[in-house]
Amino acid sequence: MSRFFNFFSKELTHTSEVQARNGLHLRPCALLAKKADAFTSTLTLHANGKSADAKKLNALLALGLEFKDTITLSARGRDAKDALHALGLLLDSFKDEKEAIKLSQSHREYKGDFLKGEAIHIGIAMAKPFIYANDLGLNKNENFKEATSRVKNELKHIKNDIFEAQLAILESIEAKSFKEFEKIIDSHISRVQDGANSTKADDYKDIRNRIFKSASKPKIPNDPFILLSDSLLPSDIEYLSKSKVAGVALKDISPRSHVAMLLRSLDIPTLKVDFDADSLKDIVIIDADSKVLLIDPKSEDIKIAKNAIREREEIKKSAFIKSGEHTITKNRETIKVLANVHDLASAKEAKEFGSDGIGLLRSEFIFKEKKPTLEEQIRFYAEIFALFDDVCVRTLDVGGDKKLPYINIREEQNPFLGIRGIRLLQTHQEIISEQLRAILKAANNRAIKIMFPMVATPREFIEAKALALRVAKKENIQIDNVQFGIMIEVPSVLFTLEEFDKVVDFYSIGTNDLAQYLFAIDRTHKTLQIDDTEGVIYRAITKIARETIKPLSICGELASDIHNTQKLIECGLTTLSVAPKMIPRIKEKIRDV
Ligand code: PEP
Ligand code: MG
Image 1 (tube, rainbow, N blue to C red):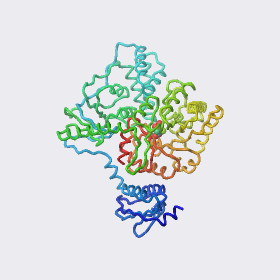
Image 2: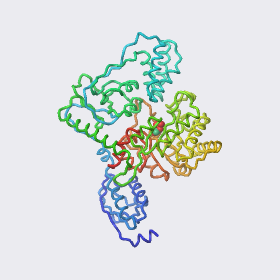
Image 3: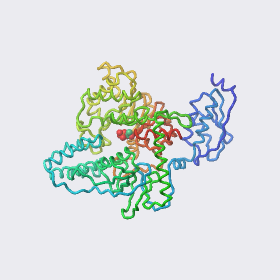
Image 4: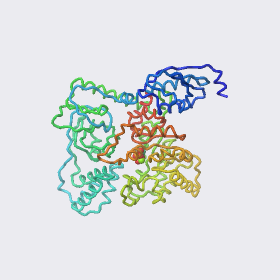
């Protein structure tokens, strides 16, 4: 019927020029076809004397569109005007990709001496430099027992999963003297130093330092300052979080370390940079957006930095005010921004920052020290479900670098390739089964999502879902409104989307793990870093977005960086799940895409 109507309706056209230097190849054509397919009008693309149905990817590819080719899009039908508007904007957005990325980042031009570095967390800060030396002497006034109870007490009072994990490590060390303790902790450090858990070495060092040194930390300025140091430990960040630290420059830091995660969660502009303390002047500027440390800023540089800092503050403020509103791109596409959370406090923070829901509830961080009772679990999930209408709970993702003291996984040669995530069903089915029972009881048939991690085959998903169904049946719980999905973290899923589409209700791309498995680089490795010059991760995301017919989101760390927001939307994603603090700014960025 619509074809018949379209035939007799007026034809509207939009003419433009291909602006991407590489022409319009697979990715843009796929996006165009996908977008065109959402309209009922007949949509045709004309170029080089040929015409193609704009809804058919192969037909578009056959046009062989190259840089500077003139293209005319014609539309006939009821929604021709809207289609032309949306597709016209999309066509105009296909600029040279590298150019587009460059433009979305701020590169400020400075006059004074600067050092190039690597951005760990974006932002700009200007203040007096302060060299932080965290090497304090031994505290000679304590015996081992006193030191241990002091440290346990310190760790117990910090509400953060990294320090709770440190407490669990300390409690597991059976030593009676400083000497014995040192021997055990040093053996742990040398065991993890170069292996799969290399970033864990920082936690062991942190515990050792706390035990051997007094509770006092170096004195820090009362006024705002830029901290410069060789490296930091998680406990230093906890200490600094109460100070007026404006920016951080470190010689040694891994982007995926706990220290980096903590600095990001505090939104402190951070740069990895090799500096010489003697060359620093009275004021320094850290511009992590431009990846530079200005060691001797000129008056023009100070002006640029002041303006950028003010702008950043204003954007943060206005983004926060608007964060509760829906997010619509200039293309009139609605993008959902959800939050990655791990406990009630972070879920409340997500609410405060205007999250549209929870895209990833990392359940393994909830109960770290001891196995929770069923009732404790039910209470916990019910509290989170009460906060949002849209909550996605991930079942326990233990293994690899994530451990729980009450889940004993045998030592493995390659823990990231071993018992992890959903594979726990093979060794600890009762724990997952109890967790499912708690989630389903807490949900009480409200619309929630349950997501399984590290799924590699449709069979694994089918078995996990079957377990949930058995639990529901046994407990007599209605689950008509419960959806079941998977994290896309294992590359095999990329090639079996058609089969997965038949069984799952939704997907969420976990780029932290997907990247480590695509490049075969341990995500916690201290020195090896992924070089994605060829854009493999984005190609993987585009492939998934193009091929699956099921709802798709992304919850890897990549999505929390505003520099990636536009690219992710261009890849075809319409739901992003990000760190709560980043929600207002990401929403603001989306409104500008
Ligand atoms: C991921 O792998 O991208 C992810 C979100 O999960 P996690 O970091 O908890 O493994
Ligand atoms: Mg993961």
